[in-house]
Amino acid sequence: MKFILILICSSLFVACKCHKKIVEQNNMNNEEALLIGKVEMHSDSSDVIKIEDAKIVGNKLEIKVSYGGGCENHSFELIGSPNISKSLPPIRSIQLIHRANKDACKALIIKEMAFDISAFTYKKESGDAIYLQLDGWDAKLLYTYP
Image 1 (cartoon, rainbow, N blue to C red):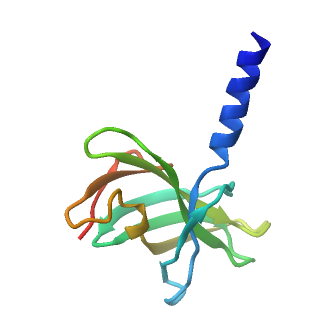
Image 2: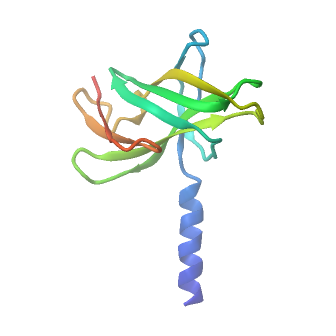
């Protein structure tokens, strides 16, 4: 019995460390950020954030967020699980990581961002479809690789 419990706990610990990370590059002004990057294995935690809107336009996931702050620079990353469900189309869980850099200010900040999500596709073939399940957003987002 102890062996089974240890095996289950070990499996959960290893599974929690496997995530893909998109490293951000800020290419736009303060009003709107275009975040593009490479995918690598990663695990992380996030500061509080509320997703106000999310939609896919081409190869980009456009997200409108709100959060408290105003005194420090905040950074954002989009990570996705390497695990994909066996449904048709498949489903990949993704999460927006917010780093507030210990910002103690309480102003309500609303920001719009766009992330290149082409790395989250299933096969990288034209017409390939996958649902992206964004943590904190109720609806699944259908992404079709161009």
